[in-house]
Image (cartoon, rainbow, N blue to C red; front, side, top):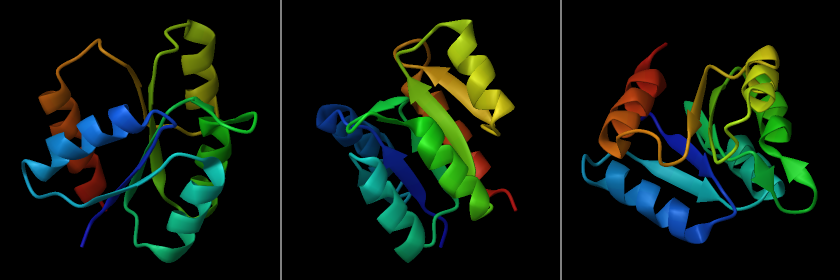
Length: 120
């Protein structure tokens, strides 16, 4: 079964995102740290990663992106960073989408991620 890994150090954000996916019974797992994300990437069958940029321990979503790419898992960013340099860096390193928190419909966001997770 397809599953999305949600990574954000903001627990309330993770709860909200999970709620949107639960409405359509799409499975997700979540992590609040890079090491937690690595563990889930190594133990769960993840089809897509959605990560924030800034994470604890001076780590970033780029760390998760690199780890996921080594496992051929696509990654999208969901972040508050609206500076073009962040978006360019994410795409240069292999991200497939870049979303800025609060600047879109979360229902459409959810549907976009489910579509991406279901792609082969």
